[in-house]
Length: 177
Image 1 (cartoon, rainbow, N blue to C red):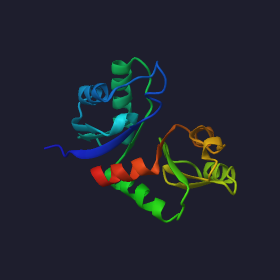
Image 2 (image 1 turned 180 degrees about the vertical axis):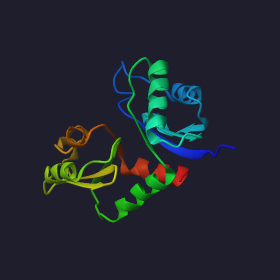
Image 3 (image 1 turned 30 degrees about the horizontal axis):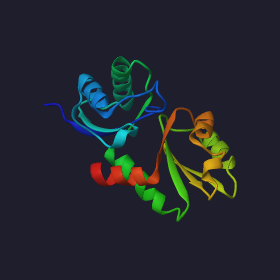
Image 4 (image 1 turned 30 degrees about the vertical axis):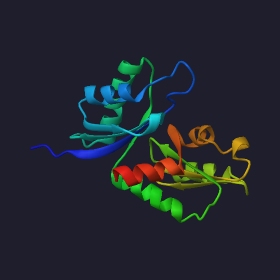
């Protein structure tokens, strides 16, 4: 008997503009076509929970990316976490005591110590990055809409990442962990 494990996938750069539309129903169809079961999505920003017998995160991400490309017609980088990992990211956020805008960039790969230093040093008094494992907490001030410390800046230093606000991260942790 093969053991089934729950995983949570975060799709990068979907539903941005007219050419990257990927509705929830199509995401579910693609995840099921990849062989995963008990699929559920949350809001239309690319958050999906599913069960799998695969153990390798890299194999899960590759299977999802192949299925998403086939269904959507464009590449959809995907970052996968276990429920335990997602819950830890949500819990870690409370330790920062930040009352401003809080976003979390979810990384495909674990960054090197040198890369972590680079992204954390790129911040300022109004924009702070705190890296923990494959999550980068972006703590932004009142002018968050003008921030230089964005997911694009994170990707420049740390590779493929997708970004969610802390409210979504907490909601997903409550629902799926």
